[in-house]
Image (tube, rainbow, N blue to C red; front, side, top):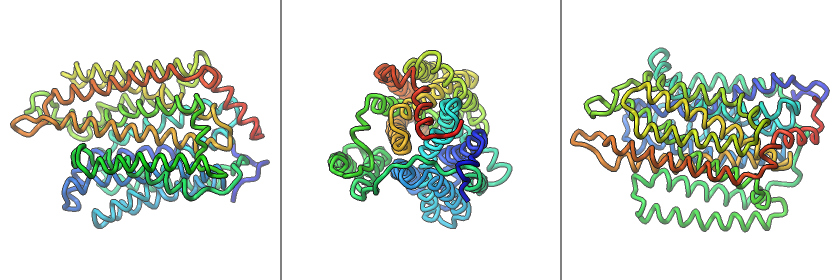
Length: 479
């Protein structure tokens, strides 16, 4: 039963419930990454098929995130959050019980459909949390996703060693199920709604170009970037994207307001999200491989899954801590300044990883810098977007920002894979130069993110907290 407006939950209760759901989603993004070889052995399949355990999740989340954000704006964010958390729980249980690789891939698709948890959570915070706490809460929830992604890599090994492989999915299933119940009982339905029916054609076209683009990025290294299949998918993605923009402009009630996406605060935040995403996913995806490379390679450390996770733990912890710190820095300086500093911190971290990685303590220290950078960028970007759009479009706008970061991450991972695996030694290990060049490319990407951050206007920057506060007041949320 949805609480009445006179019985609205305490802000801290709402934030805790949202944090459990968002944290579980972040864990599901990465828990399976370090154990793909176990998945391959468990289902007696090949590496190409196993890769679809990641690809299917990526594609599903890319399609679902903006669509569910828009549906939440129209029919109710709390209602849709219950749906998405339930999908995460069901998909996780399906993965734990999977008897075949095909079943596992379908389970990951269901999990990916829960990607809307992030924009819905942002919207609920904007509508329900008191103005004084809204900006800080947004920063914490935003940074929690990146922190949980890194923590998932850390926890994967111990969970498998102590509890067993299936608990990689049973634990998220339990926590997301509890979060769904908590949302039903404790989080009130938002009074802010976007009028009008959802347009079907723009939804179909949006899903089509996202799938085509991400599928091409995911398969480019295997198929060959100049192959007819990849070039055809990229060309089709461009054409479908153009048709989608045209359909949105003609729709009476657009799925995503293109004019709104052209707002300076929105498009600059999306540009930063795309470039910043290049490094975040690629670095956390390939550093465990570097650490786990046998010492016989001449540069690897032969670390176990658990050991490599612990080495990277400082990045995740610092990323989460910055979720509390960054909003305060934004109040004192500006979102533009904080995001720029975060991007520069990422640039320094990737450069140092590329050039100085003789000892594991060095990698931990450099990734601590990366955690600071990611925390500053991600937590501040969410506030910039929310401060640049009307309350009734907060879900779809923040959903697109999260999605663009995901697309950037997919491109970064594909680029990194191509660079690292391009050259190998006589034993089949990638050359150390591949990791060096790959992280230098990520450093260039982070530097571009710093440049893009300079384009963020001052109004949604320094005044982002005030903008979020005013939106909450407009929604007539009790303080």
